[in-house]
Image 1 (cartoon, one colour):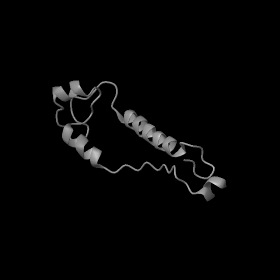
Image 2: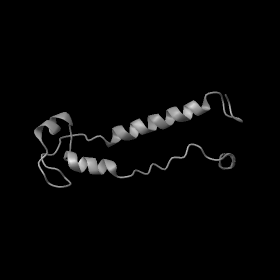
Image 3: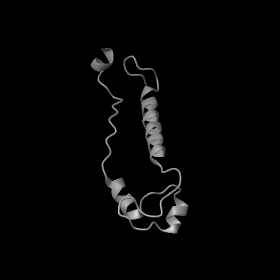
Image 4: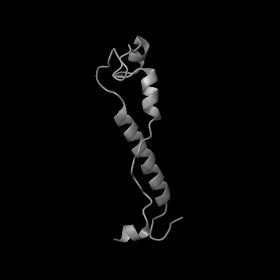
Length: 87
């Protein structure tokens, strides 16, 4: 169902774009290259199993868990008001 001047499926297109952006952002944050033997945050040794499981790993499990808990500001608003779209 179209809203105003939006074509059919516009809402689903916005949802798909948001999901795609999230996946691309997550992939960009994945570590690459050669990993570290010691955590860059706390200095503890990173277990061999983790280094094999996560290529390019730079932090231990504890520090990575803490990093993952930090809030992330994305700053994308795909639902702008009609007034802002007409300017």
